[in-house]
Structures are given as structure tokens and as C-alpha cells.
Image (cartoon, rainbow, N blue to C red; front, side, top):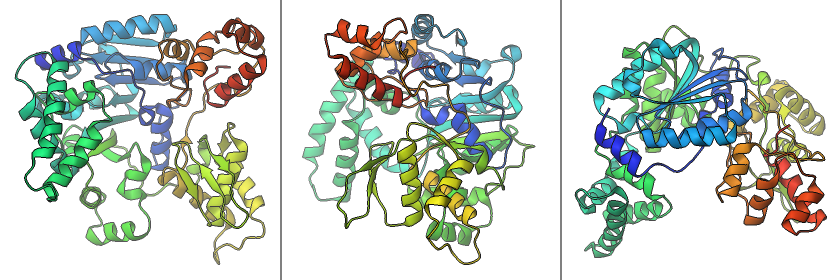
Length: 493
């Protein structure tokens, strides 16, 4: 691989993040809906290519203690940092290796799931092709590979920002210095455009606004690395096919063409019956700039629609909170991402109500269907449609829309605090460092400083009263905070 890139990742490593859509529980759920038979999740094997410091795998180890989790990265500094963190967290099932992802042989064995997040677009063409070959060679027969990449046509617009940042970034010099210089110069440039009302000025200002939310490491590696090569979906699919792999969907299930409903479904069907051409057209209609695509071995036959019974093998575990509303207005719900949803659709309202009552307990889809059916006993369904089928379709549509998550595996979480509550070692380490912990559902949980201080103490050796005394807070306050941490899937059974 590129030794310059190796050096820059050593000098300016990424921050520690976990990515929900890379978790085998999510990958298996999507694969199931696409008619495949993915490997069982609990004791699966995962290979992450370009793993950085391995935090994504370390976070997986909290919910998958019986899995084999292997990460490979060219950056020795990041791998060494990850090994130190793994030792502190007691993540014995995580193995982090310094290596070239383009030169892996069969010595590692084969894997149920292969993840390459933020890698494919950021390497030269020969390495990109080698990544596909590595996936083909190391993926088990029923295995699933996840590859994310920058995509056209959306990156045509983002390319404006890339060109401006690269123009302003000082040649040579430390990466952090180059980022800060480029950021400041770009802000000046936005105000110096002659025609402030032009389409170009509006596009640039919008991209600059987005850039302010991004960390320096992201800005450097996304815009100032020597390699950043977005792909059209058609190019991605062709590279996969040439390596003996088959595209079947997106890790965000609702972002795939096959999952679309209504007017978008009609538009895609009108342009072509070919699923791959529909995917490319979908990108054109959405102006998509990033994909999280899933591959299987070429001899597997995915389905374009969820097979009968596929949904029933999954569970919904997603936070929904009912908000106070006036008597004459539809109820409002806060969803897992913090967004507020109001609906007068009785089916969606019934599903949301049940999820709100259940949280933090998960619901198997068959159980949720039965509960919603009972709640809607007096509501008429479309003529000729089975009530249970209508409810299942509603659950699927809500998942497509991102209103709730579906899981193929549920972690062993402690949802009600015991006498001596315990958080995972990784969550405690993150809390002690003032960082955002990742919960057992592989999602970040925003905590205030007081909650982080409490979480850092929950090692299973102290009662809630002792924790309260150590932090000089009331036992009632500590108990309430611990209850909230438990409901956030931060305590282990």
C-alpha cells in the first residue's frame, strides 16, 4: 500500500468510532431480508480491513464475546494503540495485526463477515482491486462483505470542496497544520466569491457549513490524502463481479433500490428491470455521495423482496419515547436518533406506542405483530389483506425509513440494575477519558460529565450506595442515573 498514506495515518490517526451498520447483527439482518442465509452471529468470525486502532472491533467484542474479531491495518502506531486498549478492556477475542490488506494470504483462515469501512475509495486502483480479491478469497461460502466508498454523482459536488481544500493546503508540512491552514483559507474564500448569490457560492457555503462539524482527522484523510477515488455504483458492481462476488444490498437496508416503495419504486421499475441498473439510477435520483454496499459469493442467489418468514426471524430493539401532546393532536414520539415523529397513521402509531412501552426490552417481530394486532382490534384493514401481513409490512416500512432498527442478534445486556451494576471495561475506559461510550447495540450514547463519572465506577465491585458515596451524590440520584445507563444498553449481564 501507499507508504505516504501509512505515514499520514500514523501522524494524524482517526478518533475512536464504532459504526453500527458494520455490526454482524445488522449485516445478518439485511442479508436475511435479502433472501440469504448469513452465518450465525453469536460466535461468528469478523475480519476488518483498514481497522485503524480497532475500536470498531473492540466495541463489537462487548456484544460478541464468543466471536473471533481480527483487524488489519498498515499503521503500526494505530495497531499498537489498539492492542493497548484491547489489553486494558480485556478483549481477548480481538486480534490486531500490522499488515497490507492487499497482500493477505490464507493464513488468517476464512471469515463469516468482512468489513472495510472508509478504505475502498482511499487507495490506488491496484489496491482497490486487491481488496475485492481478498474478500472473495477469505469470505466463507455464506459470508457477507461490507465495503463503504465515496460515490458519484454526489461526489461531483463534494469535489468542489476537495479541490478548494487541496488548493489552500500548504504543500508538505504536518497534516494537522495543513488542515487548519486549509480550513481558515476556505472560510476566507467563501466570502471573496464575486457572485454571492450564484449556485457555486451556495454549494460551497453548504459544504463549508458541513465541514465545520467534522474533525481534523476526517478532513485530512477525506480531502487531503493523495488518494480519494469515488466510484459509480456500476463500477463497484463490475469490480465485485470480476472478483467472483455479487452485490445484494446496502447495510442501511432502506437505501437500496430494492427497498423502495411508492413513487420511487415506480420510477425505478420504469427505467429498467435490471436490479443493478435500478441501483445506479437510484443514485442519480438521490445524488448519492456515499455507499455502504454488501457482497456475497457469486454463487449465492439473493432475493429482491424479503422471503416469507424472513422478517419473523429478526427483533426490533430501538429506543422510542412518547412525548406529551395535547388531546386534540396526534401523539409525538422521539426516535432513537433524537428526531421527533408525529403520525396520524393508526398502524405506525400503534407500532410506535408498543415500542415506547417496551423500551428497553426488545421485541421479536412475531410478538410485536401480535401486540399491535391486539391494539388495533377495532381498526379496519385494506380489503382482502391479512391483518398480520399488513402489520409486518408496516414494521418493514418503518425499518426502511430508519424509524427503528432490526437485529439478527441481541446482546446479553443488563436492562435492570442489579445490586452491584457493571458496565463493560471498554465503556468504563471511554467514560473515564471523557469520550462517548458505545453501547451493546453498537451505538454511541451521549452522556453528561456526571453520567460519565458514574459509568466509569461501575466495575461490579460496588453497590449503588457505595458509588453514590464515592461521587458525593445522593443514593436516589445515583440509582436513577444507573437505571438510565441500564436502559441505554451500557450494563452487561
